[in-house]
Amino acid sequence: MQAQIFAWIHTTWLSQVAGKSDWVFTTMETVHFMGLSLLLGSIAILDLRILRVIKRIPVAKLFDLIPLAMAGFAIQLVSGVTMFSAEPAKYWGNFGFRVKMVLIALAGLNALWFWLFEHRDLKQGAAGQENRTSAKVVAALSLALWLLVLTFGRVITYLDGFEISTLFHSAGAAACAI
Amino acid sequence: MQSHALNPFLWLHDSYLATIVRESSPVYATVETFHAIGMGVLVGTITVVNLRLLGLLKRIPVFMLVNLLPLIWAGFVINACSGSLMFASDAVKMSQNRIFLTKMSLILAGFIIALSLRRVVFQNMSKWTAGGAIPGTAKFLSCSSLLVWYGAIVAGRLTAYFQ
Figure: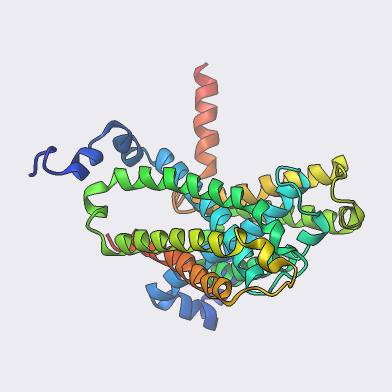
């Protein structure tokens, strides 16, 4: 099943283009770094403002950064999917990639929570007013999750060929030795 | 083989810290990760400031952008430190790498543009905040700033490929 899916991905136009030349891949990687800057920068400003590390700008005025963060995410999605399509089996088997995908899903849920339950209250809050604790927790989680997404993205290359099971094996062996 | 006295980059390459960064891949990966975090904070915040000066993100009052400047500095410091470590770990080759030298020139240009923007926009705030119109010079500088910083990202990525 999995092998069939990967084989199908390889037949797609996107995979053919991405896998054909190093230039396409390098370009996508560079674009991925640009999108990272847009996404992380705007999210960091918003989160740090809710956490009151940045002060004096009313939170509601910073909501203009949300479309910018979404634009950054869209860039990440397109460049990321292109890179994935070049070598699906390699990424799918990579521990760093898997953790990264789970973290993105969690960050997405966290953003959804923000939009559903915190967004309106923050919008109405006055400039000097303390934000409520739940909003701060969401902001801290968002910052932590996106920094971890970046970290696990960065180590994908280093974990090429790394098997998580070997870690359990060596942990098991160590436990037996004790 | 040149002596250390004649080639400061060789001395840097062989220094204790540079050797650790070069020889341990967990350490190198950590430094690299910090470089990416710093880049996101630095370029991301600069983008927000520049886009605002170009007339986008209109709800953010221009005079409030001053509060974002410490974040730009934080990103810059993270990247200067992590970048210096990575440079030192491969100092001899890097000092001769044209793409890397291009990146350094772009960063220098970005720095000068940022200082000019501070002069034009943030130190003359009272002159034009009342009217609300952003001076043409500020728009020109913002455009150049975006080009230069995103150019630095491109050059940085290419540095890893052409050594």
